[in-house]
Image (cartoon, rainbow, N blue to C red; front, side, top):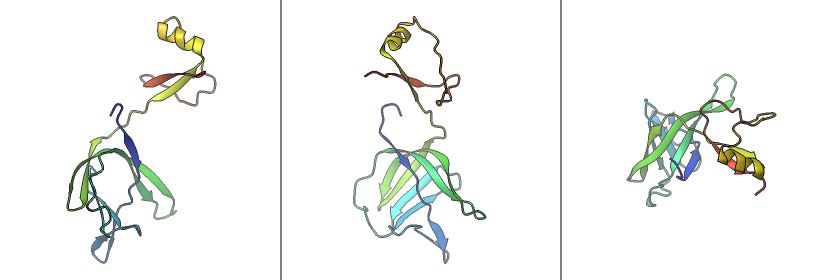
Length: 146
């Protein structure tokens, strides 16, 4: 996934109504997921975008979950899905990853960036560490002054 364009995706799953699976939105978008939660099939019941080319973006996917008791809505990370094919207006997405490695960014002043990159500075202090850094985190080093 390095240097690849990705999208965040929050598909609303289709619902069962009168023993039929129907779109859960007014736009007609019908998203279904298999029992293993590794394949999503997407199409539009109203025929919109049926003849357009398949979207080739990888999607970081979150499923909308509504608590039936509290009616509170949350989103659950499902994985990273990529389009596989488009047949008869239906796009099939397959889960490629169950985890997402998030790269954190750290900003330093110019003089510190140079020292860190040269290996002359190997530790720094982080006050109020909002990044929640931990061992084996991937991060990018950013020059704060540019």
